[in-house]
Image (tube, rainbow, N blue to C red):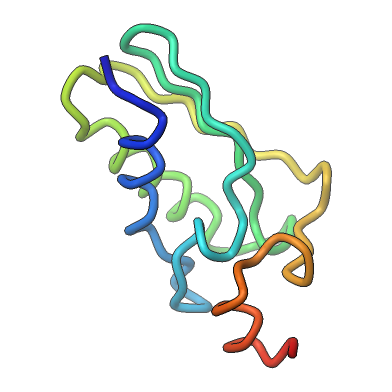
Length: 100
């Protein structure tokens, strides 16, 4: 059975193409749930009107589905709470975005 650590590691390579940074580092992943061979990823986007949204969610689905033992992936997008890089992004991203 796949672990949460493996799921998060797989998602780490997915980047927001407009910002060029990992969605994990940006703080866009809110939760992952694993039930046998089914993984659900709850995430947000930088804005509700993000033009790269379908691309990003597709990349998340593909990355997790490539893990051994995963047969189904659901990517749920939520905007509650709204993304705030000041509190959700890691320190490296904050520095790159000029938030220090």
